[in-house]
Image (tube, rainbow, N blue to C red; front, side):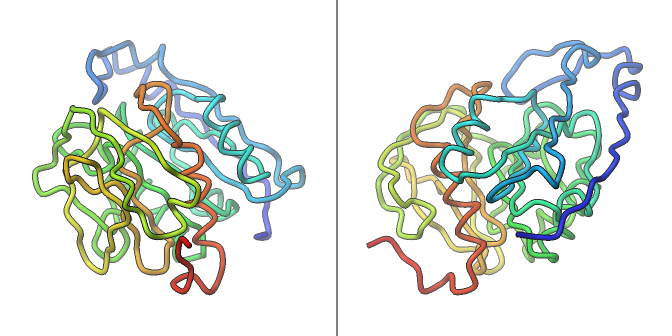
Length: 255
């Protein structure tokens, strides 16, 4: 486990609440930004047990998803609302893994992306999910989305907005024990840099992709309740977070 420390996080709820405009989301519709902001749910570092994961989407908390992931990893899964504040590198690197996906706008999508890259450089695993490449709407930016980090980009900046099922062709530990999942919200992706594909959807879209050291993984969809996708998403995220921790990674494969 990494050495951890308590970091005081400054809330910036008033920045969004004071805008007086509706906050749009990639899944359609809008709402008052003052009403959507959640609370940061962070376990004190000295109370964390097992692998630690920070769930940091631009969406409300999903305790059921966090609990399901934690059941597989045996560690803690905390929540950080990236619509309301941007976790710094010290906060991110105090976790073994950070998982994010976009719906509403990030408070600072460039700054968050830069901080995620800094955390990767310190050894943290970063999982990127649905809409991170969705430049047609709310998406993630900064260094983490460049070819040196993200294994994929979207050539159209768009999303399928159509459901498809996992084709069952995954070959890395990301898919250990995984037999089924589907999602309506899937980015249109192409590999970039040294990115490698792991698994596809039945319509041919990339399901998962990874940097060769497994420190950055793209999970094309999400098991968050806000998206309504089905299948073994919690196990996928648990696997993805864990696969980047061992030193000898590329010799591991599904038997």
